[in-house]
Length: 428
Ligand code: CMC
Image (cartoon, rainbow, N blue to C red; front, top):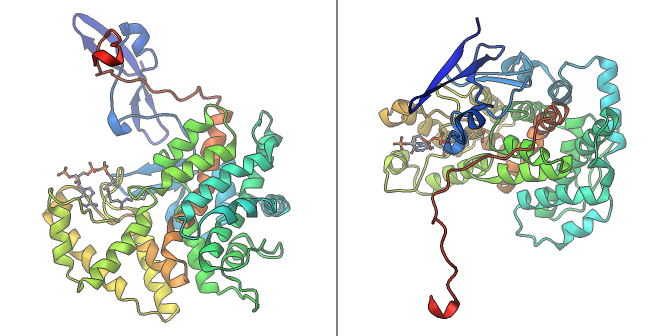
């Protein structure tokens, strides 16, 4: 007999089925709750206990610090895979054969040109514009240049929209960075691998030949893989919910980019580096900042610490910490910021405030140090996160559309005024 959950409201009892995921996670299926109970709903601000969908893409166990894409451990993928292989895995469910990967890459390359008129939109942004705002706007603008990407009723149409954005987003990312650095825009080279081409587009200068540094390439490949998906986080849920209205893929991704921008989500990587910088400038007194983070009257939070779902450790942070050490070592960079980060981490890991609340370094705590070593400006850090997250967003959007999920539309408990009579302005 299948398990059920019993609910009692007043004198009435109700029973709801319990569903089980492939890793034995349990959920009470309340689809019929409102109908059966004559209007009762559940309320869960921040969705801390609410599953919005079933998904076969990413498995995460926050208590045990486990993260897997389509069944493959993040540790295995970060060490052995190529970002484009991981993108294929996330989107289509299986690691590609060599032929499939070559075809995927060549379809992406064929669609990597961004209409030259998009430059004019970019030109209209002030130089001080945050690149996440630019990326979100230009991604949305791509719909106007590719109207066929909106109606994706067949597999073929969906595939075309996917390879278009996989090709065009890196161009927009590089343009956002080149604008900051005052460099002419470029379109990259089809003779390069996906990650090498991203680097070429971002870093090449008009007056010298660009050669890819393998250390930087490996680190970037790893960072992109580690950021590629993270199940139903804020930006991914945004992509799914916007897409559920059948807005196009690019509009849904643009909304996801905006959600990622916030400092409590992807924007944390920029905030971490700015925090570490200001601690260093202030004399490197990490204890002072630990005290501020614990003071409930001080809005300061230790950026890069804590996670909604990881309550043990963030497996991505473990990998990134080692990578940060390696990259700085290999590139011969002695960054004092790394010492500030290590000392903050040590103090937090031994402090009852952080231990009791299960606050551990998250993916963003060390990623900025690597980006900085690569020569990427701090405002671009969250853009790099978006580039990595792209295949995850696409995979989740595709799963939602193929699963014919209904439009996302939460309910609420109304706490405002009851019916009142309109008062003419003279009587207010
Ligand atoms: N510094 C100091 N105190 C903290 C921190 C922090 N970074 N994070 C959480 N707390 C405290 C919080 O004040 C609360 O204390 P109390 O129980 O006494 O009221 C307790 O820990 C629980 O925090 P919460 O805000 O209820 O937890 P949440 O699950 O709603 O928030 C979070 C998760 C990531 C938004 C939060 O930990 C945070 O703001 N961290 C800093 C920003 C950050 O690094 N974000 C990147 C997340 S990883 C990248 C991504 O996937 O987006």
